[in-house]
Structures are given as C-alpha cells and as structure tokens.
Length: 262
Image 1 (cartoon, rainbow, N blue to C red):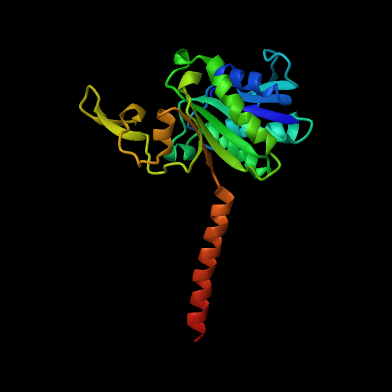
Image 2 (cartoon, rainbow, N blue to C red):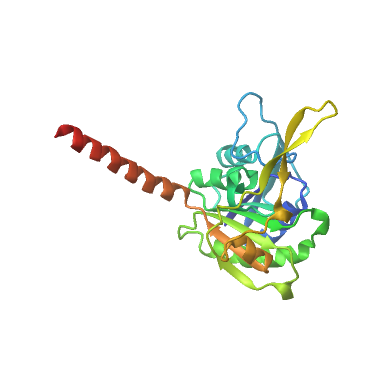
C-alpha cells in the first residue's frame, strides 16, 4: 500500500513526523510538504513563480520525501503528477495543530490538500489536533489515537472512503472516550475581524482567533464531542452536494421552459 503524507505546517512540523511514524506500520509512505508554514491558504496553487523541489532525508524508512516552496495543494499536484512513482492509495494531511472546525474547512490548507487529492479520486483525510501549540503536545499519545483512525480508514480505503475531516483530542489515553462519526457544525465561525486604532487614530482590522471564546454550540456539535474526549470523523461530500444542487437547479430551468412554452 502506498500512502502519501502532506500538511500545511511545513516539512519540519512535529505533527507530520508523528503521522509518518504511525503510517509506516501500514505501508510505503511518501512525504511531500511545503518548506514553510502555509496556514489558511485554502486551495491556492502557485502560477506566477517556479516551484522548487528539494529531496529530504530526515524521515527514516520512508519511500521518498520532498519539500517545495509551494502550497499544500501544490504538494499534492506535484506529488501525484511528478514525484511519486504511481498514484497513492490514500492521502493523509496533517497532523495540524489546532482543530479544523466549521467554516475552517474553506480556509484550511490542511483540508485543501485533502480536497486536492479527492480531485484525483484518491481517498483522503485531513487530520487535526485540538491544541493551540506544539509545545503542549505529547506526540506519543497523539500517535496512539491516530493509529486507531488510520487502521480503520486504510482497511476500508477501497470502499468509497472519499474525503474526511478528522479531529483528535489532546488527551491521555485513559481520558479517551471513543470515535464519533458526525457532521461538522458549520455554524461555527472561529475567525472574526476586530477593529483597532493605530497611533494616529486610524482604524485597522485584524482577524482574531476566537477558539477559546467559543461557547454557543449545538448539543451534538462535533467540537463539543472533541472537547469531551472523542475523536470526531466528519465525511465531507463535496461532489455529492454539487450533484444534488445541479439536479435542483436543472429542475428550476426545466420548469421555466415549461412555463414559457405554454
């Protein structure tokens, strides 16, 4: 089995190292990551400058590892089209520091890499950790939790796994309550603009991360379950959603054609 790993925190992130070490139990691992942090870049790709690739050697036992001066989506495109000997069986993006919640999925570079893989019909999962800092993380505990998710997903990789968003709690194993498959609470808006005054009295705006201030959740919110000690797994059915919307819009215009022909 060939597994591709990428992220948006950069090739030297301890989260990607933990992911690689875990996934080597399941097959050949290939790593293609940005050479620096690319948080909240969404699914942007590099068009107006060359992408430089550097082979990396600090992941013992992997089948291949590269860094590049591009976005997470660049990493997937270049990895699948050029660097890997053949299309991988599964792509994991992460382990990202900070959970992917609600509207985050539209901004997240971690999720963008998983979405890019799904465009190549590669089953994929974006994996994030409910922590604000790598310094607060015991990665040996994280690997234990991630192993349980990876084992199931890779076992069922050929059964239309599709695109998934996975959030891991940052807890001890004895506090772990299980895995919940649940839709993402899309009402959550984690980043908001706040206005500040400069020394001249002019107002400027800064995006503030309000993660620690979020309190108003639906009782079945994925974030509430995450905080309570559950791993949350959320299927993201982008293409299915668009198919349903296409059929709905087609009905609108067919109705219009019927009305104008009368």
